[in-house]
Image (cartoon, rainbow, N blue to C red; front, side, top):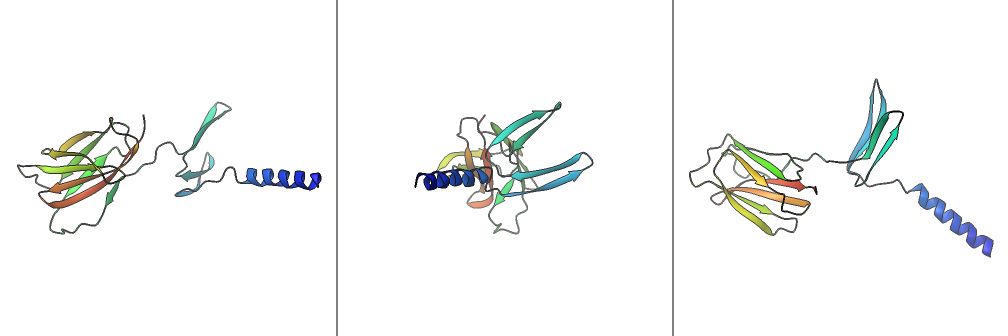
Length: 162
C-alpha cells in the first residue's frame, strides 16, 4: 500500500512539473532571422533574465504596448483625431488632438478607474495636454473626451507601477 501511495505521489509531482511553464497568453509566435530563431509570447505576467556567453535574454513580457480606442463613433460628421501616448505609462501621458477645433469653453476629459468610478475630471483647452498619472495605482483606466454632452472618444490607458 505504501509503494502505491509513493508511486501516486511521485506521478502527481511529475505531472505538475510538466505544466509548470504553461501560461494563458494573448498571442505569440516564432520569429526567424539571420541571427537565429526566437519563440515569444505576449501577455506573460512574469519575466526572468538569463545570461550566457556574453549575451542575455529577458524571458516574458516586460511592457505591453497598448493604444486602444474604446467604443464606436456615433457621430460620423465629427472629424477628431486624438492620440494618447505613451500607453502604457508609469507617470504621464500626452493627449494630442488634431482635426478638431476645440471650443472656447474647452473639452471635458473624464478619467474613470477599472470599476467605473470617476477619478478625475478636467477641462482640455489646448491641442496638446499632459495628464499626470503618477499619483494613481497601477491599473487600467478609461479616459473619455466629451464636447458639451457629446462623447467624442474613449481611450483605455494602462498605468504600470514604477
